[in-house]
Amino acid sequence: MLTRAVIDRTVAAALEEDAPWGDLTSEYLIPATATATAELVAREAGIFSGGEVFAAAFRLTDPRVDVQLVASDGEVFESGAVLAVVSGPARSVLTAERIGLNFVQRMSGIATLTARYVAEVADTGARIADTRKTTPGLRAFERHAVVDGGGRNHRHSLSDAVMAKDNHLAVLGGASVTAALLAAKARLPHTIHIEVEVDRLDQIEPVLAAGIGTIMLDNFSLDDLRTGVAQVAGRAVVEASGGVSLDTVKAIAETGVDVISVGALTHSARALDLGLDVRIDAA
Image (cartoon, rainbow, N blue to C red; front, side, top):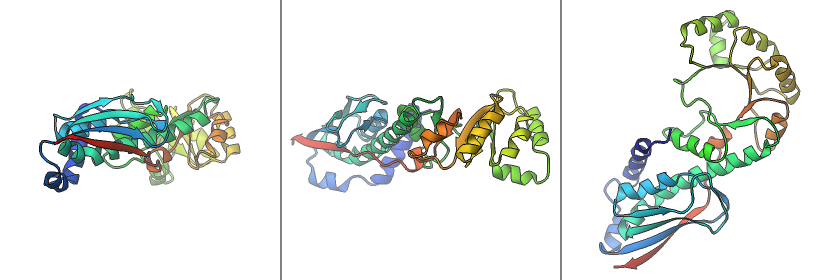
């Protein structure tokens, strides 16, 4: 998902936003002949993510800047660890610094938070998955970070799978949910997966009657989750969503659900504290 083309397009747009007419501070204060070496240093422990994105910020600013990645995506690091080394024209290093940091701090923060959720359910059979609650334009970046943290990706977009949620079912009004789902299945290619969200136990059987692959139990209590898992009885993948936090995720996993989708992985992750320590080498 996070291809070089996607990286370059998004990072180039970020650089254009940050320095549309150049970096005035560097151009007027830093000699054109000055070179610099900089280390990407962890101010706290975490999971690294976004190395190629970080490097792209410098490469697209000036191909003369060299970035050596010390850490790999998905690697655990401690506070004080050097994660990358940057060297090249000082003006270019300083121009790209903030954009490179913005991406790698955000992605490493998501990876680190995801790893905490994954650790909470490690002794269960549940998988932690992200949602579409991502920053517009950055979905590929944020979902890459989720995987680096040990999580799984949900459908990438509305075009990838059928997922009927409460608002879709509400539009059907009094129409039979089973009949509507069967009619949709008859028109869809056999490769398209179908998931349906329910918010009450009595909605489960009409959905299962249509042979749906995944059923989402949304905002169910723990007791209802256990009842729902028993009712589905392996006839579909069971996903739990709603009310998921680090305090609740283990108990949710222990109800026997297969997947737990967590919007907080991307919409509430804190940027990790990483810094770029720059040293001007010569002028």
